[in-house]
Amino acid sequence: MARRLTKKQHERISNKKVEQIDALKNFDPDSLFKGRVIAQHGPHLMIEDDAYQIYQANIRQNLETIVCGDYVYFTFENNLPVVLQLIPRHNELARVSYGQRKKLIAANLDQIFIVIAPKPEPSPSLIDRYLIAIREFNIPMGIIVNKADMIDESNDFSFIEDYQKAFDIKVILTSQDHPESLKQLHNELVGKTSIFVGQSGVGKSSLTNKMIPELSLQTQRISATTGLGNHTTSATTLYHMPDHQGSLIDSPGVRSFNIDHLTLNSIQNGFPDIMPFVLQCKFSNCRHLQDPGCAVQTALDDNLISERRVQSFLQIMQTAL
Ligand SMILES: Nc1nc2c(ncn2[C@@H]2O[C@H](COP(=O)(O)OP(=O)(O)O)[C@@H](O)[C@H]2O)c(=O)[nH]1
Ligand SMILES: [Mg+2]
Ligand SMILES: [Zn+2]
Image (cartoon, rainbow, N blue to C red; front, top):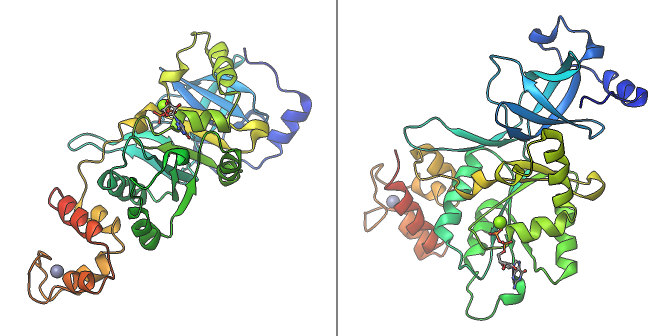
């Protein structure tokens, strides 16, 4: 299974500078390879080298949790790939549950797109919570408004403007049968590792399939490497766009992205539109309702901030830890 690298691949990889990592200093750089984790299966990691060769690798004991999207160094022991070291992450996405350890979903993401659609009807307060979490993890984000073909005058998407004002966020309108819109989305994904989040039924899978027409082929390739049959659909997996133009991570974990329990600080960071006014209120314990000297109320009266966002802020603040 550990097919030998062609000479050319080997040169390309070994010529790469191995970052100075203590744990690896006793290894011959020629025997070290850099890979990216594309999935995790029980005790094994599916990793891909620079030449897109896939391996099922064991993990050296005592390594921290390694997830889809991570970069690692691996070597071959008895011709079997073994992951030796996690390369420090740029960022990570995790599920945070109160009283539990955070559960990592994926790492090294260039962007997250929140997908919404006219049906199922969007929940702005859910989006507010997503945004708090995404800002907490410091990952660039955008909004995809999918099923554009179904939008009519009964749909009110004006709440999106609040986000555009507050976050300088990218908004992309897409529809399955509008190739031009899919091309635009495709362009946003080129050269990046992206993830789609959002309510069930908004069209995440449909969009992923449009971006990666050979998705099932890639799933089959991974299954063939594990020899475990087709159970990859249940695992967080990194897929490649055609010609490796970009990567999309599909994750069931994201579907139950738990963001119920947030700290005061992370909530405040999620409301950059409201916070400057909160800080100007006359009393530090201002409830921002009818309180004297409330700068939030004044900003509302002056139409400087969105009433819906203020309501959402107050509501989420009540749940703060
Ligand atoms: N009208 C319309 N329906 C769409 C569009 N994209 C997806 N759908 C439909 O929405 C439903 C849910 O899509 P799916 O991709 O499974 O959503 P997911 O749960 O977010 O992965 C399916 O019946 C799709 O055919 C679109 O652009 N327009
Ligand atoms: Mg789906
Ligand atoms: Zn106030």
